[in-house]
Length: 421
Ligand code: ADP
Ligand code: ASP
Ligand code: MG
Image (cartoon, rainbow, N blue to C red; front, side):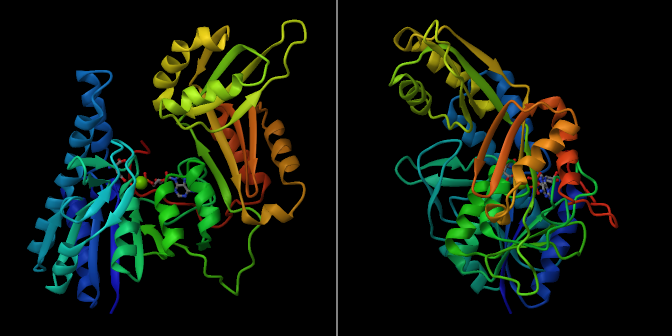
């Protein structure tokens, strides 16, 4: 008998029929003799729809109210799932993040979990019942306000609960059969990865492979929670995310190709090329609470002593960063700002690349053959990322996937549900 945390994403609980299907699956696990704790996301695209609704009311909604609004999504799915499970003859109770003891810091919209004290969940398990927890939310003890963990945050809730409850495994149920060498929505020949280490998965998640959230993988690595990513629409074995070596497998050079369409690029034109200007510029962006990703500084023009600095950031932070920089324009003395949200980012990830020369050369050759222009480049030990035009990104991903011989020539990857939103 094991303790299993099962998380079901939005596409797995998109409507009443899906909720009943998930309930059956939970009951099967319970009847097999296991203890089950379930974490749910909001139904379908509910979170996006709530964000759209708020935007219709005001372009800059207060962050506290935004979190209260968004946590409503998971409350709907958790209670409906509890009803569906109870109907099948197994006792089930749903809990909000706060009731489940998910304690966070005070940063609305992207709160971090600082503690999990799931006494009510433990009591529920002890009574032989199924506990269902709303993903993506917690409570800040100093304000007593509910907070949300950032998009995709239900994955983090599941792993955090699994760590706290010392669960045997955390199963992430989604609308594809596991983690693939690329997003199956773009690359139908993508190959399912049987097993992947935390570091490579972390880079994939950080590079946009939203099948697992970044914070979730960080948490899983820190507490060594084995994560099994699989489909709620099939019974196939999925992908095991773990650091435990599989002796029958050699470490692959390349794990996969990730893509990200959620970033934008700001170019600060005509920055005086003297010490301290770049520092000030990025201080302003940081003070505005914006995380930046890639940075490129051009060679300065000798005649003017001015240079251009470009950086990428989440497009959702574009307005905030632009406003903060514009407010400080006289002090920094730059000429103008350019904002571009039609960029895409492609990342090639692989733990084996640190010991293999020629990976960058092969990547650039594949992009050039596909006629894709590279605008920015950044690298880490196990990742190479490039910025391209957004409308060339899909072609770029397919070309690179093929160049690195990742295509599965036998089976096509299945996308069972979801809208890809
Ligand atoms: P959920 O609603 O279950 O949380 P998400 O939409 O957050 O599901 O994540 C699943 C989606 O992630 C898949 O439908 C797929 O389009 C996308 N995805 C992106 N990269 C990958 C990848 N490398 N492997 C599998 N899925 C990926
Ligand atoms: N419902 C939230 C979102 O759409 C959290 C999640 O699904 O993980 O981002
Ligand atoms: Mg998700």
